[in-house]
Image (spheres, helix red, strand yellow):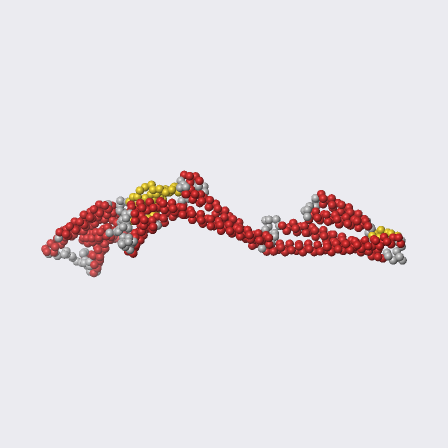
Length: 568
């Protein structure tokens, strides 16, 4: 029960507080309404009048189209899908070209009133004014793509400027000059691209020549440095190795034959003593014949393998080796000497055999020396080949870098050449007037009403400023008013209970004054303020939505005021 009573107390207090708040709000609205209406209307009127002085910006423009010639589209369908892409990207800068804008202003007559010298040239002030006009036009120019495809593009050129009358003429002049300027720009861009591509291609060719020269020098100086190409020294090395092996085996056999001849010479020399030689042995002439044949066949085999480049399976080599094996077997089976009875009659033959054996020994010594020299030269040449290959391995990394750069530059040259062809084709077609064509598809236009500031925004801002000022005035009036209007306010403020309260004692004069102010003065003042705010708001609205009518109203009002002032 106590809890329920506490809730009733809170509810009664809350209802009382809400009623008091609503009563205070109604009191403020009732007593302070004039403090809200008058400042709000005055400030709104001032805001509306100030908004009239804000510069109005109008939009005007024209529509142009860039398209392929049909022949151009067919020829360049794959090589040059969008030849006017560069033109599209540069269009914004082209229409803002100061020279183009100046020519358009001159054609529209906007430069006629500038300050000039007697000879017709612009004074510094005139130049500054001209530059200001050009900068204003350039700042308001923009482009917008309306539609676009692979073969055509429709673009709207828009100019935003406060002078509505000037916009159509300036836009018309800019459009008429943009069309040939765009064509000229297209040719210039393509010529620049062609010159750049040709310059890069020439640089690539020069670099390729230098790299080929370097690669050739590497290959000449370091044979076998390129692993992807046959080593020209490999065949020479193979021949030298084969010859070296044969030479070593031949030297070994010749050295054995030399030992036999030396033994025969010793035997023949010892057989000259008649006391010791009843029967002596002489060198077997067949062995000498067989040794000559063996040497001849070996020379033929080496010649066929080194100079004629025959392999071991060649019929001539196989047949020669069979003959060599037969002679070698017969040589091995033939005794080096044969017995011969000593007799005075045979002394002459013995001496002849001794001389012949000595002659064979001398020839064999000379042959051994030549073979040893040849073997030494083969070994030296093989060493040179190994050193050359070692040097080639040291420089192989630099060679690979040079070759990789050559491949890259060659690929770059191919790409440059591929790009030069379509550009040259476009320029050729342009010379035949069969490339990109520009045309105007809509005459210049201008918006009937300003595009900025927006009417709704101006209305909301002006009324909002007036309302905010009115509310602030009411709040300030309430804050500076310290009078007590109810017994509850007095009890709350002083903490003293109020026994009884009486209304304000009003005299007749005070009542009459308050009645006049309440019924006559304040309503009239409020009516005037509201009328002023409404009139200024209408003027502001008319200046935004119907500039022509606003201009005529303003002119007529100005003439009326001037006439009245003139009559006075």
